[in-house]
Image (cartoon, rainbow, N blue to C red; front, side, top):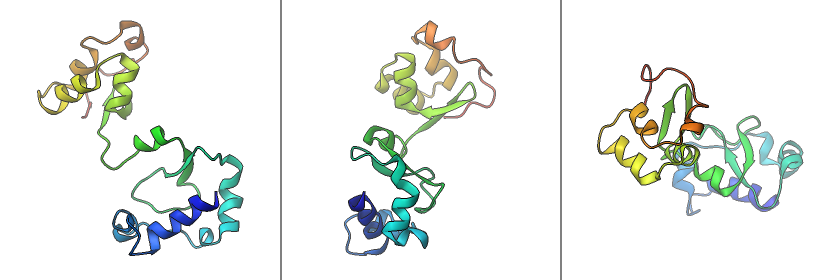
Amino acid sequence: MYYRWRGMVARTTDPNHRRYADYGGRGITVCERWKSFEAFAEDMGSTFSPELTLERIDNDRGYEPGNCRWATVIEQARNKRSSHLVTFRGQTKTIIEWSELLGLNYDTVRGRLTKQGWSVERTLTTGADPAVLARFVGPAEAGETA
């Protein structure tokens, strides 16, 4: 946990850190309390596991209680600023999450939405597993976003 904390501090405060531009350079900070490893460990230690990484829930906010959690590498990869979020029948997920849930090929879904101009409803229902699709009830087209 100490190395995760040290990395967090370095990314946000050291202009020579290789990732500083993505963190401190764009205004991401560490709250005063977490500038102390002991306080950080007190707040985050109960859920720490060595295979997890420190993730900010809202990528535009800093490292602070309530905005951080321990996440797997896959969970964290899906919470990047570059993730393409899609709202379908009242639920918002990344394209890869929808693809996996509905049994669709990721590249097909991405292409339908970004290159072919398909609606979210058409994209996620065409070829989807009907049994899984039945779990998602809600407005078919109204208010859907890509």
